[in-house]
Length: 343
Ligand SMILES: *[C@@H]1O[C@H](CO)[C@@H](O)[C@H](O)[C@H]1NC(C)=O
Ligand SMILES: *[C@@H]1O[C@H](CO)[C@@H](O)[C@H](O)[C@H]1NC(C)=O
Ligand SMILES: *[C@@H]1O[C@H](CO)[C@@H](O)[C@H](O)[C@H]1NC(C)=O
Ligand SMILES: *[C@@H]1O[C@H](CO)[C@@H](O)[C@H](O)[C@H]1NC(C)=O
Ligand SMILES: *[C@@H]1O[C@H](CO)[C@@H](O)[C@H](O)[C@H]1NC(C)=O
Ligand SMILES: *[C@@H]1O[C@H](CO)[C@@H](O)[C@H](O)[C@H]1NC(C)=O
Ligand SMILES: *[C@@H]1O[C@H](CO)[C@@H](O)[C@H](O)[C@H]1NC(C)=O
Image 1 (tube, rainbow, N blue to C red):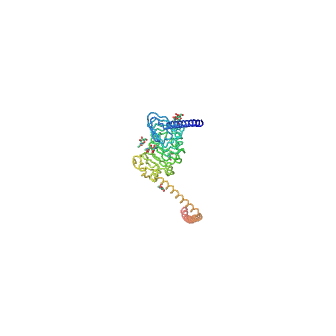
Image 2: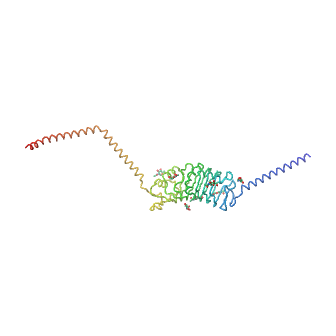
Image 3: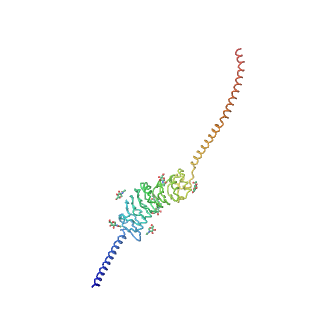
């Protein structure tokens, strides 16, 4: 009787345990099935998800939070809003996010929030027109940012403030090729960790004094400048000097003049300018020397004032003597004349 009861209780407990296990197992199955579900039109393998422009896609994409590489290409995403890649506010483990050719026009504040581990972000071949100053917020691990052939004029104008964020403190490679840039769209590099800045294939005509001194102050940076229509008219000599005498331009042997016509195709680093800076310096120097001579002359005059006074007195006296002699002669000579008149 006793043993029978124990047996029944044991059986019940056993069944319950099995039931529990089954439930847990089922739950696990459902969960893992959910997190490994591959979105329509995408290929998912290992920790990569690649979606290439089939149909439409809705952001944020529901992919496993363990995905490391996510590539979307050929969609019309238009507007990346807050947390566009972090479903339900979960943090993703993405390392690389490639968004080439997706017709993106707008990146709003915090669009990439939730991607703390992102190291590479490629936004090339879009049409960025509006870029929030907080577009790159939360990308504290970002190392590479590719913005090739993607900035419209207004996007380029908004880039400097978007890059000023302290979030990008680890950024070491920034590619801005093919954006029709006329200036370097960065206020400075202090908040970044840049070693490579690609500005090739833009419409830069020169780099001014500020740009050069910013580069020189940031020693480890290497700048790529080939395929820009540089103007070689000796108006910014710091630029030529920097190209010649610094190793900071990594492709200096591919940096050519485009203007004026007679310089077209020659290397910018071979520019020789008659140095009017030096002329100005030598004029100033000459002026200073002349002024010094003048001062010395005046001092000599001042120190010798007694001697000079004496000397002047001597001259005056000599003159007076001479005058007296003359006067006397004159008086003597006048008598016969008077006599003549009298006669
Ligand atoms: C992610 O992509 C990079 C190159 O973009 C590649 O080197 C790496 O192996 C990829 N990682 C995975 C998990 O597929
Ligand atoms: C981007 O989309 C959001 C939500 O759809 C909208 O509120 C916002 O105005 C859009 N931004 C721009 C610049 O169009
Ligand atoms: C996000 O939330 C929606 C509903 O709010 C849910 O259907 C979906 O499974 C959630 N996704 C993740 C990854 O948690
Ligand atoms: C633009 O960015 C890509 C990364 O997608 C890079 O591989 C390529 O070299 C860049 N293009 C130019 C012209 O620098
Ligand atoms: C240079 O940039 C222009 C757009 O400004 C683009 O059309 C062209 O393909 C780029 N050239 C190369 C070699 O990347
Ligand atoms: C380069 O010079 C331009 C024009 O003076 C300026 O707007 C830009 O901020 C400068 N950028 C750097 C990094 O010096
Ligand atoms: C060239 O660079 C060196 C240091 O790299 C510097 O000492 C020297 O003054 C520079 N020369 C000119 C003409 O700028």
